[in-house]
Image 1 (cartoon, rainbow, N blue to C red):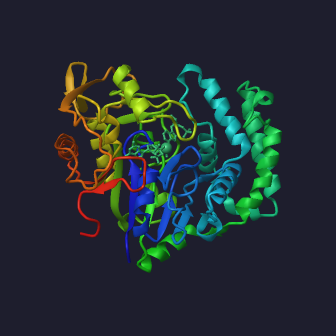
Image 2: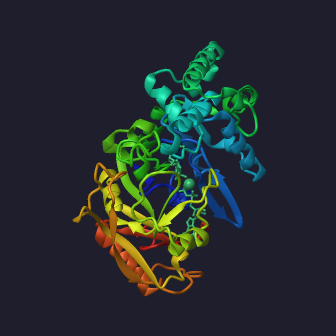
Image 3: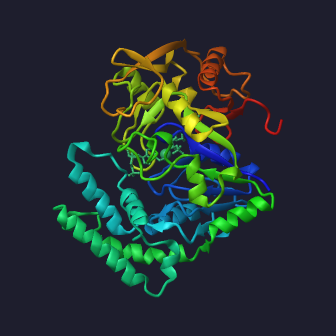
Length: 435
Ligand code: GDP
Ligand code: IMO
Ligand code: MG
């Protein structure tokens, strides 16, 4: 019996999860997504090619590995169809190695409309949702009114769909939301509904599985399974910066509910963090830099959302948040991405604690969203050199190694590897793989 390894984001998303999953996939037999949906955008780069995945796991380019969409994931069939087409255009036939849980919930066009209606009703307090229908679809899951992938095969699917859609229409009208002006990709709700219905044929051409049995059988047979997180710790529905969060458990515990594995089956927990920090959408971000340095991180790091294209807010790495993430997730090793973005910086800083009302703390307070939080910064000398062509961890500049050692010291978690470019080939493991 093997254990399931977990890889997840420790900040506010976009840490480079997709890239690291792609790099680690050769060491696994199965890559499984356990939560989230098309709000995710996971970027892979290799052989001069760039690809962004949303619902499909990041092991898909390794055609000899099984990729699994677990029960905890949300599927928007039209977006799924588009992803399949994009893969086909790159010569990848996902039908060979992609399985889908019968229990994964569907995002309906009217869920996406409700996302827009909810955001509009919040006015200035809006969350900055990706508007993919995540919140409303998980709401229906919890309300026990949702529709699942397996339901698409039922003879009464059309009636159940219509009932749910009508509920959404009633809610939208009660919120004074103008349904007639709603558009997805320039289409009205009715127009989009047509293409959504058509896209069900693509979804149904895939293998629907009882994924909880599938995963547990794999573990019993000694296969190696990697659970791929989406979003990240600080967007978790329970422990993130609520209400500026997503609507799923993005944490290690989400693997148990999103794939049907026992807590005792969890193996390594790999946490991904950027060497700095970003956030897209609204919500608190104590180390955000509203100055030239923040702009520089954004420009050099190409910090624009992989799903929405929105500019990401940028700032220094936040160790109180990172320690919290390591605690909640039981992180056993860190992967640090994008230090190369700071190659030209004279100084790089890390926030080691917060000052709140004159008190120093390293805990995340309940009133995180409303308190004035001053990050206490520790400056480090920059390494002032390109990392291009560096081929081993040991060969990294000493100033960067000092910075990385401070992250290890501050979190108490060892670094497994550092990523120094978007490309698959540029991940430097601290110890040779397998040693
Ligand atoms: P994910 O959502 O966690 O998979 O991350 P995204 O794909 O949304 O965002 C990460 C971005 O950083 C992508 O554009 C990646 O190509 C890029 N990236 C990943 N690792 C590195 C790195 O080490 N250096 C640089 N410069 N870019 C990286
Ligand atoms: P990956 O997997 C970064 C953010 C949105 C918004 C909030 C709620 O690529 O790291 P939602 O659409 O879930 O209702 O949005 O969460 N958000 C992400 N930010 N990366 C993501 O995914 C995100 N998925 C959602 O910007 O603030
Ligand atoms: Mg992303």
